[in-house]
Length: 446
Image (tube, rainbow, N blue to C red; front, side):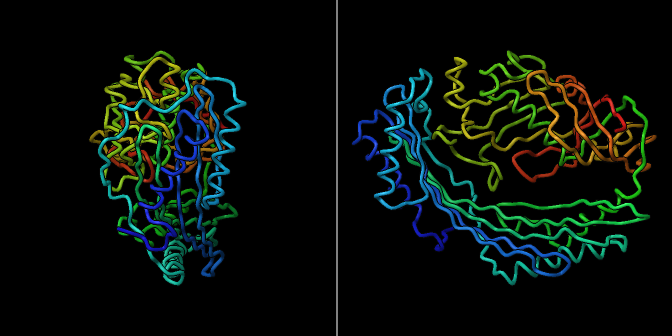
């Protein structure tokens, strides 16, 4: 599906990217790579039934990296005129000439380039008018405010839409690109009871507007999540099982992916050094990476170096099957790239048969975590300590909300202590994961 709102077509920016390489070669570069991108979007926010913000964005840019042997230079511009692009190439070349040699830099190997670029159905423009977006945002917020009389205020509801084009080329003769889109609806409200105030939110994001949750549903969920946090109680410091909701369980997976990513590995700043082929987690944990899911929020037929992406098992029954590597980090480690320059793709964490209520019963007594604060994860040691809020559970039943607590453990122990992964899977980003139940963490009252 094309989008006539862009100044250039996909074929035109592909040609422009190839022209950049010609400019670089003319200035003596032994190799070069470039990416051109165009994006446009609209965002509308309302609060308490009134329009707060209407924002538009229209961006464009070109980045170029040149190599003079093992010397590298990089420059970028938001001006796509021929003169500006030539000046940007010149700047990159001048930088390269004054840069120290790096034996590991360079393009990814030519034989790794994507040969066939699949259409992954990533482009679904939402040509929605401002008035239509305002109506949707108001309906979302209204549903939240009407869900309970204790909801007395709102932080607002937002409707956003965005679409883009990009093309990547390098000196191996590879040129690829495609259009994409991403849209979202969100709502955050405030509830009050006995001078106790709480806030919570909910959102939906998708490639196609047809795949978004209904605005009223998002608002209702935001309201319900806010109300359930009222009248939180203190708890004593203890060591108990902890259940992470899907929205937070994805963060645990993110920590694992960071620990097996090339940059942290070659810098020796990971608690999972030399873990390939080893048991790093409970046998319950299985992680599959699939870059080729239709409409996937992290789908791509090639990575940011043109390397073909492929589906693979990252963790099988708790055993690490592969790292997450760009060509640079792969060379530093003496390994092969994995098609992950630019990050991971769709991560599917295999679910068990238990839903959220089943996991509560399995846990018995412990803590459900629904919010985390701070960034208390030490990537080198794996030590984990975060401010948190959630719910106290006794005999498999939620008895009251809790707040102003800290949860602590070590990520290596947490991974090996995974008891179950729930089937309450959320798809709100690059990870598809249900609730994760961990056998034991320290819960301390602040």
